[in-house]
Image (cartoon, rainbow, N blue to C red):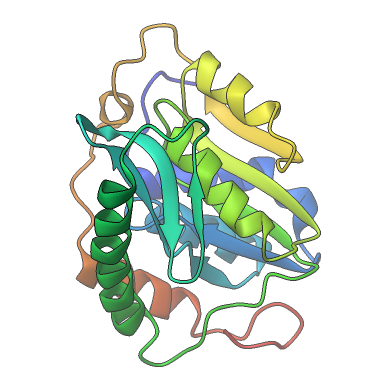
Length: 219
């Protein structure tokens, strides 16, 4: 395999090849918006499974917003231990993030409902991870929804991040195509890595779920 992917969709097709054994299982593909949607759609089509989005967002450290100290969903919150921010900061960020997530929910679920993840094989897909902190927090939120197993599928990540995921008590398997030593950012491993807009993400989600998947259950 080359050290770069053509684009997110081609990376998703390569991931799908590694996940074919889950075809005909009770699967939900859960994409991290927005960059995870093109990959998630490619995986969902191959597995003939419904595609959904992980409606969660990281809480950034007050002095470094890119460093995740937890994650928030519309009805739950996970924080790192020890908590590396004041209670006031956490509460303000929780309100701000939930407003963003509420807006995103209204956009993404105009014509559908979120998938029930209970007792499902949940495959969480993103276009890559750097530290793994945001993904770990999202995984913990997904775990609260009582899936059968959780699989993380990503095209690229540093070895340290993959190992961090593998030792999580909530992760059953990690599928990662590349673990380069020269990792600096996810985008360096894609020939095309333009921003996925909300409009594109919604279109991908709706188009992927037009077909009735998962043993006749519609999204």
